Image (cartoon, rainbow over all chains, first blue to last red; front, side):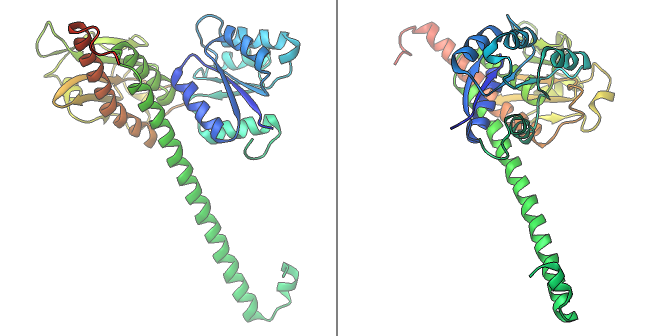
Length: 126
Length: 205
């Protein structure tokens, strides 16, 4: 069965690109444009992993991450923070809030594949 | 044959085997490099397809501008960017239409050095190495957008994010696509706007 990934990003360009990459690698992909929408989609779709942008309008990535961790159904879902923010404080806060990996945008496709593969315990395609 | 068996062979055969091993290792390395090249090319094409879809799936000039901003920030990794278009009120100047990161002067004279770059027909990467060390007010790249002799505007990039020390090949490919397809998308949106204003119902399918 295909692994399902939830992509959360307010950038339509990033959503489209990451969706294409992950679908090509055999993942089932669902998406959300902000933190609030992410919580709804995560509850409904039960993703195997979540790619979460930090800076978003409305509920931002850190608030969404805290909310995801507070919910029983997503408390242990692997979350990869995907952001342009390279400042150490953002990474520290994200780790404290419970993220499993931190990827800086723009990144190589192979970095995304390797990170997800490691978190989901799969070597190649999903 | 395993390596221990190979060691018991008479010298000529061992030499042959060693040579074949070297050939195989070289072929493997060549295949790895080829695979990396193909993956890189594939990644580039995927980025360009996404950009073109974003630019051409709208006839709203504001949405085209949003796509351009989005691409520059998220795919190039630049959060200091401004967009200039020929000013309608003062001839010979370019006016800033939007910016990210509070950069760029409000107006640029077309006759200035920067003005020449902004109105030239092709993208320019001004700083090829160590972008972070350039003066903060100096652009690192310029992407003019022309279509059929019409200058639709120019994107001016200043600093890159700390994780991006310099422009790579993919960035230059993105600049070329934005230069050509961004111009076409802005031109189409402007035409559509004028056409819709004159005949509001005529454009509907």
